[in-house]
Length: 150
Length: 150
DNA sequence: ATGTAATTGAGAATTAATCTCGATAATAAC
DNA sequence: GTTATTATCGAGATTAATTCTCAATTACAT
Image (tube, rainbow over all chains, first blue to last red; front, side):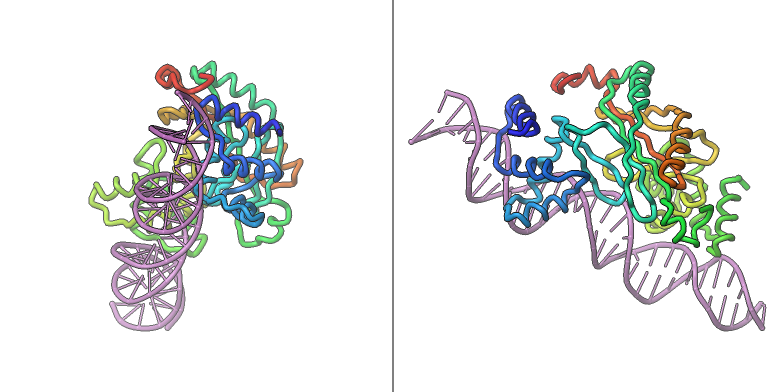
């Protein structure tokens, strides 16, 4: 059994929830894919493999995976949530092109220090952060003559 | 005339758009309020003052204010966009309590350097960033016994 | 085996945001 | 000032992501 599944099942047991084939199917699919995903894409992928899992179940399962630290929400400011693996992946942030939507991932270890400073200064228990940097990639900068200050 | 209005009118003229009482009303209201706001709150405030401005007009005006650098979108992960002044305010980020929603603002000047590094490394023209740090404030940590790892 | 209560799928409901369209009004040209 | 052009307006319809409802199912404890 993969350790993602193990983590999830420990979480399930600990919370008095139930192991269901649907939840395992969804989790397995998520960890077979690399990179970001969203609800719609995940649903279509599962459907394409003959799965009968409903969107409602996906919407219900994702918060559990988030809660046990396997995945997290990512905001690409395009009207719906995206998600990505946390488990087994180095912490990273996203540089997004406002023109074409391309995503570059980058690491910024100093944010760990920032979290500790903030925890101390404001007496917070920090659970995480989201850093999105946005701008225009070279290709889009050359394309869009109309825009200002480019 | 306030300089926010001046900036907006320069922008309007430059783009061949039109000065309308609705847009000025909305802009004036935004800059009378301090702190964050959202479309619904802004609409109700205007309505409360007897304004006839429609929500559609607010939705249409905000992108203009964003485009000319007066305000920006802020993501509090609660299902809709929030906005805040940029003009006349130091760049800052948000520390949000997952329990009660309290927002602490903090400055982190090193992100300016990070932007420059990213611009160089990935050949991007950086337009801005969003950093949200989230966790639990002292009060919420004491309240929520049920949660884990608190 | 049985009881219970968590979970499911299907579709309705909700909600933020966008779009449509006829009416209005800001600007430019005369 | 008058007129023409067309951006902008308000109201309501539409879209799309997400959540909710509810009856049927099923995981788990006893």
